[in-house]
Image (cartoon, rainbow, N blue to C red; front, side):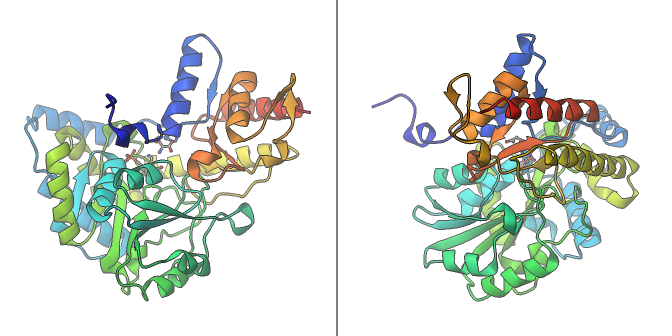
Amino acid sequence: MGLIAKRILSMEESATLAMTQKANELKEQGVDVISLSIGEPDFNTPEFIKEAAKKALNDNFTHYPPVSGFVDIRQAIVKKLKRDNGLEYKPNQIVVSTGAKQALANTILCLVDPGDEVIIPAPFWVSYTELIKFAEGTPVIVETNIEADFKATPAQIEAAITSKTKLIMFNSPNNPSGSIYSREEIAAIVEVLKKYPNIYIVSDEIYELINFRGKHTSFAEFSDVKDRVIIINGVSKGFSMTGWRLGYSVSTSEIAKAANKLQGQITSGTNTIAQKAALVALERDPEDVAELQEMKEKFEMRRDMFYNALKEIPGLKLNKPEGAFYLFPEVDNYYGKSFNGKVIANDVDLSSYLLSEAHVSTVPGGAFGNENCIRFSYATDEASLIEAAKRIKQALAALS
Ligand code: PMP
Ligand code: GLU
């Protein structure tokens, strides 16, 4: 009998966090590493949000909160859903959690039984598959490619459905591809899913506010499936609040009750100060928050800058992302080439090579379900992006 339980031994480490740790270790040794591995805005949390946190502390919001979150933040989320998404919900359909990550974990653990299948279009965020396996479910991956802008078609989704399918997970805007499903594309997928009333739909909308295309569309806007949609969202990305750890799920009250039960045994309610800070963030119409609009404009400008710089590199194939803050180029043209006699066989080798030779940290695409790609996060300052593009170009040119 081993010490560590099998469910942990068989779990992959989060590749995004692992690569970021590697980059930080090199930085501590004095190496000038440009970190393009972590997916988090480099901006500070807006002042009005920090002020609300200070007030919460002074007002002694320091006791256990309700497991699902304070009533006021759940009411603010209900209003946000109406204001930004045209959706009607009640506070008992909301569960506030420690990051969108916990909201996802709650949802998967509450819905997936051993043997259930969960359809995930690839590329997908690294934690999806591990959470599904933790619940003893089976991830069923739908492959996409750069020519399809990394989006799954309704026919591909229908082909993946079996009698065991319990859940399907969408993430738009997408991490790592930055792709956004249009309203028409979602409508076409809904046409398929409405024929399968036992399949639930996770709609991970954590990048809702980092959208350069236009208005966000949620799967929950489609009445044929609304009752089967679980929206996952939070304040990490849109409000630059990654370290506050606050996310939420929106679902039927039955699913919310189950998530409340699970969360009540694992973490209890989310940090009180973070809840009071997130409350003022969610109360504001994002269109009227200057800091958010500036951040979005900066991301779009950096997207253009980094995209144009990488486009110059022969052998890289790129899609132009419409949201989030990642580029996910296809890099397999370089596989089989070598540097100083060492062959770059795959995404992991290329990502390691870029770290050791160019001092640029990235994440291998295999962690997101596509080994032909690697992920760059462009959520960093412009000078670093220009320098990173230069170093990447040189390092790739040195491969023969
Ligand atoms: N979903 C996606 C697609 C993500 O990229 C992330 C990473 N932040 C999360 C969920 C988790 O977000 P949080 O930091 O709020 O836990
Ligand atoms: N979601 C971010 C990323 O993809 C943060 C890291 C993580 O939570 O895995 O890099």
